[in-house]
Amino acid sequence: MAARSDSLERYIEGVRKRNPGETEFHQAVYEVAASIIPYIQDKPRYQNMQILERMAEPDRVVMFRVCWEDDKGNIRVNRGYRVQFNNSIGPYKGGIRFHPSVTLSVLKFLGFEQTFKNSLTGLPMGGGKGGADFNPKGKSDSEVMRFCQSFMTELARHIGENTDVPAGDIGVGAREIGYMFGQYKRLTNEFVGVLTGKGLEFGGSLIRTEATGYGTIYMLDNMLTHAGNSVEGKSVVISGSGNVATYAAQKVKQLGGKVLTMSDSSGFIHDPAGIDEEKLAYIIDLKQVRRGRISEYADKYDAEFHEGRPWGVTCDMAVPCATQNELTGDDAAVLLANGCMAVSEGANMPTELSGIKAFQDAGILYAPSKAANAGGVAVSGLEMSQNSARISWKEEELQTLLRDIMKDIHDNCAEYGAENGKVDYLKGANIAGFVKVADAMLAYGVV
Ligand code: NDP
Ligand code: 2IT
Image (cartoon, protein in one colour):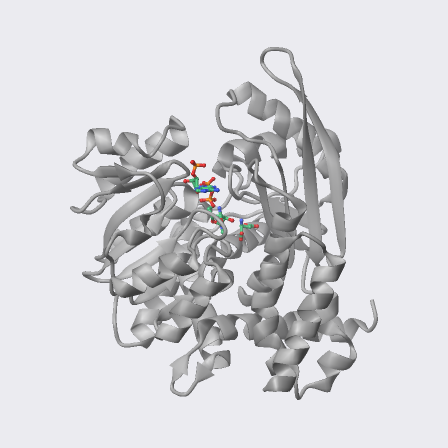
């Protein structure tokens, strides 16, 4: 045991030294290495070939200037990125994030996580992530369009339907994907599935919009079923009010649960009566169409608005769907003290390491993001298949495929994470995601 923790510390020290100041990236690598190092202890093929060391080094990183003109005629400069992390099992695949907090560290943590997540889906997709420190909030449609076109003018030369297929993430939804796809098509004179999350008119897939949120709740439901329980009648606290949060809330409602909260970066609303379909339709219009603030919900419905995050509201289950490190160790202690029995992560790495430890020590059900939110990229993979074959599948087929993929992810995690009659879903997800990528890397030799 001492040898294992020594090797973990040594490994992480190396990662810290090679990537100074990249705290989010260190955190993501630590969380994975803590599961993988004990697993490969008696498997010299992975150790001799330095597989884990190689996995923490992206294949390549592209950083570029994005220049655009705002509505007042000012010239603005942002920084764009694409991190092509690992293409051992398929083309690089992963979202694009537009948010002022985007840094190389954030995109490297996301690209690293994506490699394991995409492996878990069972589909042939490698890991990548991109974005820019551009803040879409308060920008006009024309400004967003000009930014997206300028961003794609550089990105286009680095991506391709068989090379790297970006999609949406924070700040990038249907509008931004439309502008970027249009610019790619114009630059290359090719109509190919180079982005996913496209509009249905130009090669998008049914249920891609809903897939991440639905998948996160399927993961929750699968864990509960495995433990002899269900979502029905349970209260759920959700953070965020964007794409993932909205459809997670819808699925909780469909499965008979009650959603008490939703949030944005200004605060959260608490609706003790529960957020039903009609209220959810209001939130979709408020956030996606009018691009307003969640606080407006409390003016319309019998609900309270509070600053901060929603973790102090008593609930049976918590589903963080906003951003990284939004649930601290202290928040985890509060949730546990209030009787929270399950957590499923819609956002990427929303829980700090101390929070994860608190959930695991308490023995509650905890689904890490790389498993819980994999439904989104899984349906992106299905969008790629439909584009290559130039066909569109029906909604029922896609719904069944999404449910089946999430069930397979659950069962794989349960198999690799089995421990004394219980399941460590974090360990299970890390190992199940690792094995396929690692074995492909072994097959390629030293590359
Ligand atoms: P959206 O841009 O649609 O929504 C993001 C939501 O999170 C908004 O409510 C936003 O509030 C809030 N938020 C963002 N940053 C912060 C912050 N720093 N502090 C507090 N609140 C914040 O993004 P998505 O719903 O697509 O993404 C949410 C999470 O899910 C991210 O972690 C993303 O990586 C992950 N994810 C997304 C997938 C997808 O398919 N879209 C797939 C898998 C994971 P505000 O409006 O105030 O900015
Ligand atoms: O984090 C993620 O999995 C995403 N943002 C979705 C990626 C994708 O390619 O659909």
